[in-house]
Image 1 (cartoon, rainbow, N blue to C red):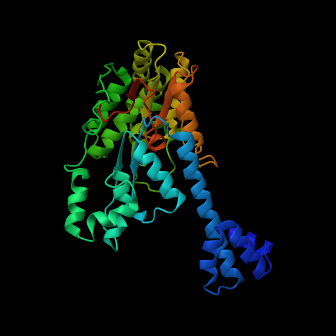
Image 2: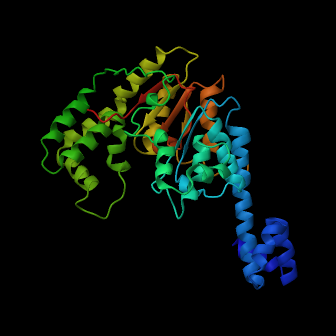
Length: 363
């Protein structure tokens, strides 16, 4: 689309060359134009240069607006072997906030690329050298010197606990919230366990829904399926096989989930100034259900679900990032309900004092 738009706007070879100089810079444009490209190929280079410029501006925005000046943040840089040159603005931005962080992890499955010198940027990130250009003088192209230089920085054995790299992080207090399920749920669970039409994994999944959001299992709310032997088709047959089963499910829906009530009681015992983060494992329907039920109990929590955009803005942020930060630090916010899938973008949750796993893998 970008190519077609530029192709319609730039109608001559000279105009394309001038735009390339403006976007990519004189030196880079000269290198490109030495290839004797035609107008269409020059326009393709303009598109690539514009995309790179946008990416660089995003990295600069992240560096200046998101990461704190005091270095009180963590950085995990994946596929770090893709950064060979230190000349790009993106590499310089990553290098700046990586080296300033309290700690950082550089991930790669290809430590040495085409040449030993390709590790110069990685050596700079880790603090082995203060200038990537000094790396070749240090290792002198010798793989043994490379191994000795990086050995102190290799995470072996693999990091399994964040406190192994940052002992200042407090140990979380794990607290199991006890509650009694509704009698209707217990009865359905007992019948479910004796049903031969479900596998053990399917029974566990259905039991979790019964406890966390029974409305999801109502026939009117089941996902459509053309497979007559699919899980939800068999569940519907199971529910209507005996009239009392359907009545039990509707009764449980009317009574409300005791698990939600237990969460509400736990929140009531939390300091009013603290922020709570409630994670759901499954769909947006469960997230919306938990948020609505807690609102009835007087807890007005924000929600992050699939409707909250994760598209990167020109300033390098996203709507999810803004809502995530608001839920932690805005005085009027009481907390957040979100699913694992929509809150798994490496966001910092230091402002939350309590995390509740609403759908733990247990009955």
